[in-house]
Image (cartoon, rainbow, N blue to C red; front, side, top):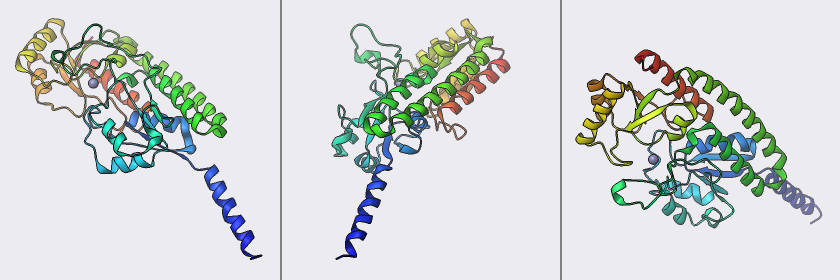
Length: 307
Ligand SMILES: [Zn+2]
């Protein structure tokens, strides 16, 4: 007995210390959020995204493994604004994890402080297509919103692990400073091309266009979430010719058939531009996404003589 007691005490002490350093297990809906959680959470979190950046975040195929991941999560971070409404809510229910249910401590809607565009006024009808009543959910594509997401994440991680408050605050401050520097650089790079007219496939880019001075004059989708139609495509081509639009932005998960046909008819150039971290293999974090997209855009604008 005399020998067992110190060993038991040692085991308890080890478990206790392991617990003290146990990372917060975070699951995010998208890789953009995972990147920001990593920035703020550092080594005090483990983080994994359910959706991959090359998938359409509106329509993610739910895998059984998602339920297991959600079951084990301490925190779920979602984009919100109904982006994930088609796939995430049933998974949260099936996870049987009371910690991460909406309204619980372990659920974070990352959009709450963000600047949200395209908030519809008046009644929404089915005829409008897949319009989000809470505004455009692609808000992470403005770096200022990336900062606001990080702020929310800092607050939530601090709530979940009070002892790490100073660590999260320092990580947030560092992210904030690097993001401010990068944003100045991105805006300076884009400044000569302010007002460049583009067409985009889906309505993914209002925040990006607003931040970097693009003018989105039309969409390949006749309405959000509705596939291209010949009549709409014809109207769009006429408008592109009238306004001399030379750039078409296509998210990596859309079929290139219609964009390529429009490009042939109008002399415009198709750019497959990722709106998310993980959208292409070169883009592994939130900074790389803007680096990649802005570089792609500037080269195409120069080449097309779109200004
Ligand atoms: Zn959308």
